[in-house]
Each structure stands twice: as C-alpha cells, then as structure tokens.
Image (cartoon, rainbow, N blue to C red; front, side):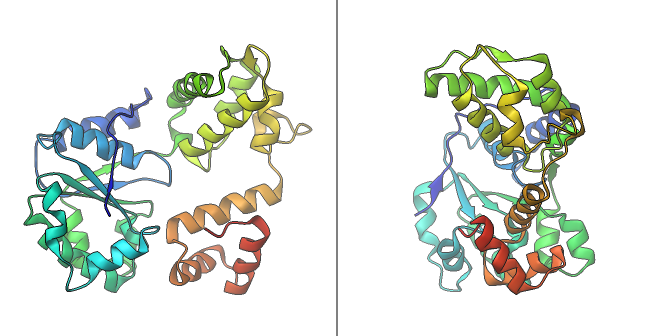
Length: 297
C-alpha cells in the first residue's frame, strides 16, 4: 500500500539557502523531468518535494512516498521484474517520491532506474532524494551511472540547519505554537539566553532535532518563556563550559554520529556494514553500540 503525502505543511524559514531551494522548486514545477533533492537527514527534502508537487499542474493528484530504507517490502516489490505497474493506476498523473535512493545497492539502483522508466509510462512525475552526495558517490563508483544520468536533470539542494541560522528562530516559534495547542500551554517564546543557546548549537540532527528539543523543553517549562535551563539537558550542553560553545558529552555525540550514519546508510545488513566502515569501527562494535543506545528500528 502506497503512502500518500499530506500537502498541508508549511515551509518555515527566511534564509538565502531555503529561498533558493524554494525558487528551484517553482521553476521545476513547470517541467515534467525527474527531480533529485539533496541535503542532510531532516533538512526538509520531503517538504520541498511536497511544495513542488503542490505548485505543479499535478497538485490535484496525490504525491506517493516510497522510503528506500524503511519500506523494504515495497521497494523489493517495485524492483522485481514482475512488478504489476497497474497498482499505480488509481494514482495515475500524480507524483512519486523515492526517499534515500543512495541507500540502495548498485544492483538495486539499476533495477530502480529500469522500474522508473516503466512508472513514467503511467504519467508520473518522479522525485528522488539522497542525504549522501551522489556526485561524490558516482566518482567513487558507488552510484549507478544510468540512475545518475536519470536523476541529474533537475537537482534541488537544501543546506543543513547550521548553515541556515536565519531559519532557527522562525522554526522555534512555529513549533512553540504547535506544541502550545497540543500541550494546552501558553509559552510565549524564548529568553535571550535561550535564543543564544539555540543559535550557537550545531544541530547535527537538523530540523527534526530542533523540533524534538522544543517539544521536550515545553513539557518541562511552566514559565511564560523557555529558558536555557530547559534546553541544557536536552541538548547535552555542559553548564561548566558555557552554552555558547556547544559542548556536549562524548556519549551524546557518539549516539548522534551513530544515528546519522544509520539514517544515511540504512538499517539493512549492507547499510550497517557501510555505516561501520564510515565510522571506522568493526561491525561487531557497531552492533554493541546499537544495543547500548537502543538504536535498532
């Protein structure tokens, strides 16, 4: 069963990098070529794909999502030679988004390329995303050349949150409004010190990490404003070293790096092998750390 994306979400931010990505979506919306969205995990690639779809003439049709990491059964079915393309008939004329295509093996990438040729015959617009740089992967012969040529027609990149400082506070105020409704609170904003903390932090988990930090802070805050003491434990910032330096315990950093590697390469056996190589540890050590931090899906 295909997952249909909700187009009701807003894009929040004011940075130059985000504005350029939005303008790229507007231009691409006038065409029908495949679009590749590139950027770190949780930077907003799917959100931009939804915006592009909404701006296009296909907006009255659904945007389907296939997660190449999590939807193993679905992607296996699509890559199979006997895939029944008629399953897509109810959504004909819409768009379909393949998330994290670089997590697939070279063989799977080539099978996907061939499947996409068939899917396009049902008048679908193809979107793909990768949190890995596919240009570097191509040079390293880790990305299928046929799929590379196919996805390189339109590329939209979104910078990580640490390079979009102007987007941090608008996103914070957006999530405060959202969680005020959910938690029945009336938090009005941040103290100046809390703003400094958030603006100086590196945000390895990007927008999703920011959302979770604000959520946790609002659960414990009973005052009118979120202060630095509501953020310190959630961010893992050392009070002794000062908030502005963004220092965190080594265990917290290790957990963030593990999570990032697995989100990039996937939770399959092959993905874990690649993650272990990227982290310069053995596969056995990786499994021990996954158990320690409870990171298995």
